[in-house]
Image (cartoon, rainbow, N blue to C red; front, side, top):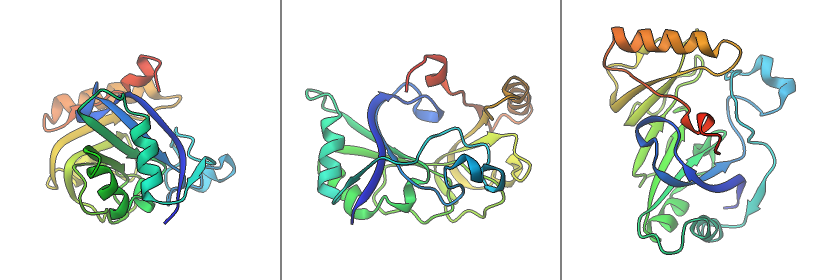
Length: 205
């Protein structure tokens, strides 16, 4: 199948359990919770999204996209780590692409809203619930909940089978207040850890 990709870039992971890890990021176009168009934001399930995932470039097949991802990795580095994000990457990330990257010795991670079934073979699964949408993925390596959300209470996820539980303050005009709320919640509920968007603090992608 063909893949529509917004961007591929090499940087440090800024959020969650892998904060500080070097990775190639592959951002797919498209999402099932928002069109990505500002005119549709008010009616979107995820109306607080802070990511541009519209436009981009098409790759004809898994091999071509895997080669592009490999080309973004430092040539002499043995460890290879790719993070698929979006938009909603599970709409496009399939087992052919996962296999093509595993064959190139990549550790393959995904950051998903959890409403779409995931391809098999992934090494790291991060789920970030959005709005009132039921999860089809209820286990993985980490759950990263943007906080606060009207429709999502952290207690609804505490019994799910995840290795790490993160609260990430919602960006936007109330970010300082949201940071305080997230800090207070983590202090009162130590199962949860605070996740900050450190890439923004460092002014990197």
